[in-house]
Length: 185
Image (tube, rainbow, N blue to C red; front, side):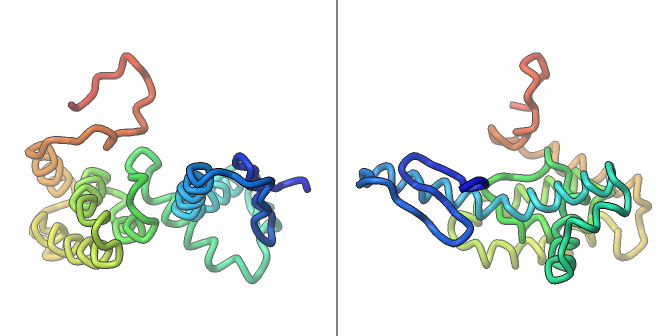
């Protein structure tokens, strides 16, 4: 059927999984990893797709979204619009990125908070998201965003300095695809 996704012996249809033959355990396990990547990416795909449609087609884009999907999909679009693709970290959930989307004017703070959540994500994803929300409040307080002690430019400078004090790990800036572009590590 048109629109199905195929991964080796596995065909993903709109209503289920169809297995061709008897794939090996390794092939089955690889398909599971593929499904996990899809599950973690679909909200961004939808959000980016909607944002593109709105930019390219104006209000006409709304015709492509059903009433039942509209609210959820607008939420996906808002997060995608407010967390730049090069800041997103592939092994953190969409919920992690939702937590930092409000800080769209301070991408360095977003990056720092997501980086803080990364080690915990492999252990307990739910607790990591909760800690990220707590860390978000703490970071905003430290840079004076809530108290009004520091204006936005000073807050960004403080956040950038805090970020520079830590070593970046490989893959943090996965959006750097230009070979000649200097790396942070």
